[in-house]
Structure formats: structure tokens, C-alpha cells
Image (cartoon, rainbow, N blue to C red; front, side):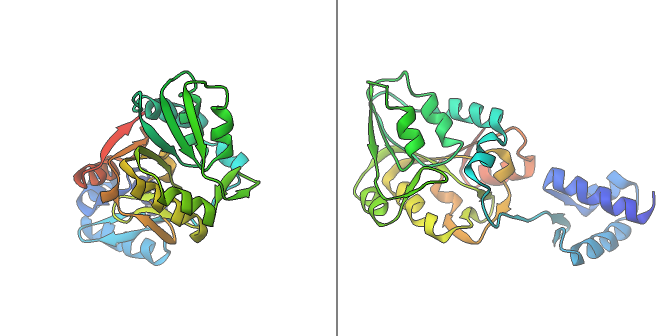
Length: 253
């Protein structure tokens, strides 16, 4: 195998597994560890990977969020499974927060038949989904409406969220890193999520597996603030172990 081809396959392998040791890569590509180290040094200079002691990891950035319509159709079947699993964690009599998002919307869709539940949300889509559910009390946060996503945000949203206490908060997030925690590219959306997290006894993050391992500009909360992560089965063993070692219950669907 030519060196150029090996380096391309090496990057693909590390991206698939999120992390790998020099010894593993040498065995995988049937070359000496010294050869792998040279390859990694060249690839790192191109900004495709980051070397660690004895190995390599991939760090990808989320610099902005696609439009609501784009996000709603992406990973749709997985989001539906995540929503169903998350809704199954809600018990009768509970007060919960459902964050705005395309994945969290599927939680609401799986709660329409339930009774004796109070849902607080900053998402007009979530509220509309539950409008014909007589057994569910819906409280909308208020705030500035973002027409492109039907999300409410801003001073009024923050004020309302600071005044409540709930059993569970279901949080959507565009970037979730096993070391750096919940992250977001838009500063103005961070504070509301932080208030949701502080208001809840249990924090459940719902994120399709394409969000896992991503970095973004603004920190929302550390992983120590998260009790449960519900994600897709495509999460790498490396990332899943990192979350579990940090005390996060990881559920894959």
C-alpha cells in the first residue's frame, strides 16, 4: 500500500473509531509503529487529527447549526427512536422540561397519550404537538420567537426558567464532547439551556450520534451535570466509555 493511500485509510479508520493507539494502527495497517508515527505527524500538520500520548483522536467542530428543516430530516429514524426511549423515562405525576429541538420534538410526540404530566417548553412545536392531550398541562416559557425554528429565547424565557423546579429536563445539544461536555456555537442560546439544567433533578441529554465527540465555541455544562445520555448506536466505544467513566448513564437506540 502506498503511503498516501495508507494515510487516507488511517484517517478514515480513526474517524470511525474516534480514537486509536499507535500499536493498534500499526497492527491494522501491517507496518512498524515508527511508520505510523511519521504518518500521524504529517496528518496532524494538515489539521485532520490530534495526537495524544501513545495514540491519536479526531476532534471535529460544530461552528453553526443547519436550518430547522435540514435538521428535522437528518437522522430522522434515529431521532424517532431516541424520542420514544426518552418518553419512556417520564413517569406519571412528573413535571418535566422539554428543550427546543428536532430530537426533543419526538419526545413530545410519544407523550400525547399520557396523563398527569406537566411539560414546560420553550418550543412552540412541542407545545402544539401536545395541545390536544387533555392529560398533559403545557407551560410555555414565553420569550422572543425564532420564526425559523419556533423556539422561544431571551430575557423572558430565562426569567421563567429560573423560577421553576422539575423532576427531569430533556436537553438537546448540537455538540457533546466526552471531555468538554455540552457545547453550542451560538452564545445567545446557552443561558436558557443552563437554566433548564439547574432547574432539574435529573438531566437527560438527547442527541443523535452525529453530535457526539464534537467541539463548539461555547460551553453549556460539564458532563458531570448529566445523568443520562440517549443517543444512537453509532457512538464509538471510546466515547461511550468516556461518558460512562464520568458517571453518565449511556443508552443507545
